[in-house]
Image (cartoon, rainbow, N blue to C red; front, side, top):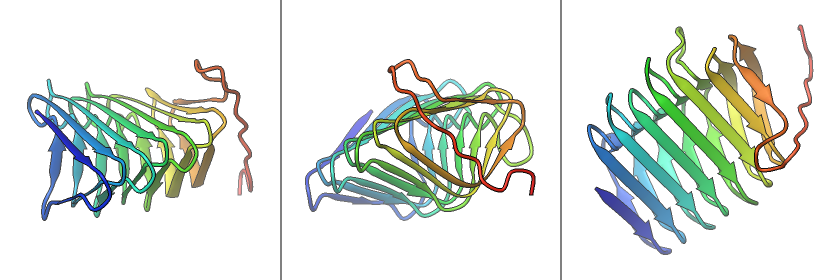
Length: 193
């Protein structure tokens, strides 16, 4: 199924979890100032499922009061574009074994705020699936806690901004030249402290 929340003043408020592609295929579009709110967010929740979420346009927000998983056990895609904003506590891309998660933060004013940690290709204590995030064209990825990159995790930095309390490499990679032709810069502070 497909759900679109569009226009300033358009709100979809969920008192519990929200799954985009729980056991089948699902699409969520948040556009032109629309706002979606829930507790835990899933994109591609169960094995075999496929979910795609796009948050685009100034004033468009997806507010997760708890965690957000892009590819929890299935396949998940998150696009944050053209001034859209996504927020959550912990974030996961490719969380479970066999899952695939792909996220892109692209465009001026586009922000993904992780109020705690972000895990690429796994979770807090174990590797999982494949997780990739690209930060492009003045987009911003903010992680208040640690960014943990497991074996099949990839962080691609173009001409965007990435901030994190710490980066923990568990065998994954950071790429500062992207297929989109953007070259990024990685600045490390307090290395080894």
